[in-house]
Image (cartoon, rainbow, N blue to C red):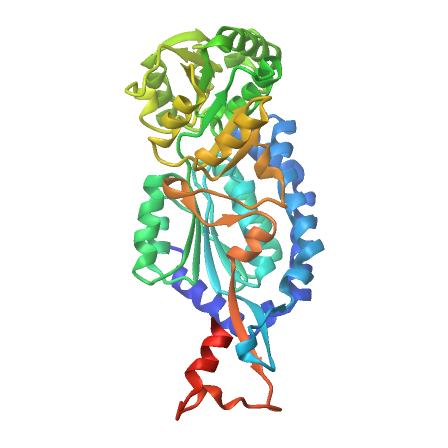
Length: 456
């Protein structure tokens, strides 16, 4: 059995040497990680094909490419991020200067899921390395082959005193969560997130939780319906719907509903052919348990298109469901699969009220050509992040922090957001010795009036 405690002790000893606080050390390690990922690019893509049946293009687009771009962006900006920042100082602290210094937490735990098994393990690791931490990465065993290649890459280039990989299922998760880390970064379901947060609370360990939820997609009567259909179908059925920010359900204005459905049917056919469940480039459901769960949810409404499945390959065709209410089984949980329930509305406020009556989603998508409606929707709905007139793409911009709110998570990452997550801000005031204003010292005499003038 892997000795987690011993690895954490090694990481604490290495962290105490101060080597990871050297920015040039961090850059060198990120360059090494990038070069090794490129070296094993074919193996990574093959592993993703085995685990999820991802086509090479989709595997590079959503996993390898995003990771390489994140490394490039981080290396470019890390020196500036790590530099102490001078901050304005109030006049009451005359002859002082104020600074924010960044410091890494120490040894951090990164727990990643199976749906984007390479990207969601390595992108947070990039942030942890950039910030100067040591890390233990715990990939999902559901995506077994991808976990193997992650372990191979990391063990080849990093000593476990700096970055280690721990493999295994629930027992491994439990052993890790029983230990004291300096920070925990978790991506997964809200149910598992509660377990992680409860375990972290025993050690007062700070956490970032990237969870999920039922992310809405609203199409109003002004939308470019043809383009909306294409972008919704792409975002929803990417990775066979096994995406935490996939549109989970569709709220469509009654006047454009039929047109939108018709266009979506056409897009599904163009993208995936007449029989998507037999398309070798169309991803599969991760395991039999989830395949059976999704097959059951399909009975929640009337199948408008799709509905076919291949139990042998665990592929489920892109499926649109009508006749759905908020009480339907498919609306009681995050779908995390290629099923898209559709409901209609007549007034935008009614649609936004529906969204706001439920837990805050990780993502929010709105298709409109009305600036007024766009601004109104962004202000009224609470969500982690999202897009206007597109889906998914907001998380591929390293300049935008990504994360949830409420039950969809806490904390953010990507780009500088990752660096901020994995560093602590130390606030410092440096006082001059040239002058010591006696105002603050007792006896106070008639100082109060002067103090009010300065601080009022």
